[in-house]
Image (cartoon, rainbow, N blue to C red; front, side, top):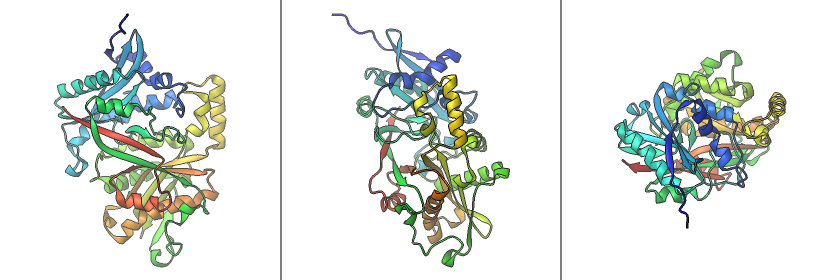
Length: 388
């Protein structure tokens, strides 16, 4: 009986291999129930060193797994130099390395790919490997272990159910789960009432607060407000890596064509930023039927859909509260106020659903707030660790 060929791991080098790396998930998972391919263009922005802001403070090596000359899996190994500056509460140190972009159809390739990433990190002095993060905790986060059939969402990775057990069998252990929740959108949706009606920005006990939208003429300034509040809110949270100015500028540039002023909620106290939230339309709503590499006609269809803003869902990707009110009653209330303000904009936005994620499983205050409305998460992603 002929034995199957062994798995061969190849470091990615050059444009052609990088293109194979970027396109591989949609080729591996094509036809699997629940999988929808992201646009190759979007993935190139995330992964290509010439386009990704990550490489301003990190380095990475990509690997492809081949059997019989055919690619059957991929993985990235990366180091983020910002881990040298984060607090102990994050669980990260300057010796923490990461893996990500783990996509496989051949179970035998999983331990070989993970070992290739571990070897690369070990050679550079890392003592712990954590992931999958692509390329850090501000990008695509975790391995999907629940929710494969849920609505696909922008920047939320998809994986087959069996991959979790394959990763654990390779010697990695759970470090953290992150959760996502689906909420109905609109002023009459139940989620709009997670804050008592008596508590409204600009009225009564909240009379010292005001709320505004994105200022399209001052995108750089508003991006920096968003970055500062987000970094301040989550700086002592597990897995936190700060957004840099370059990363925020790159993200704003990328989403600017689909960004509307009402996607940005800024609550100010006496003219100073107090809390902020940013919601991003779900690109899968307009691209899912076009594939990862649309035809010229497909690109034309996508352009029309973007122009008409034919989105049915969106995701809250960033939320933050000022350091000055962190730990106060107002600070505890602001996340609910921000979410409610987004819900109240349902008569202006075309979305019927909004996704809140990621939420750390250990973030009980946020979970209690959300689970008053949505008792169960729709998706669960897992981060694993391994000593090197």
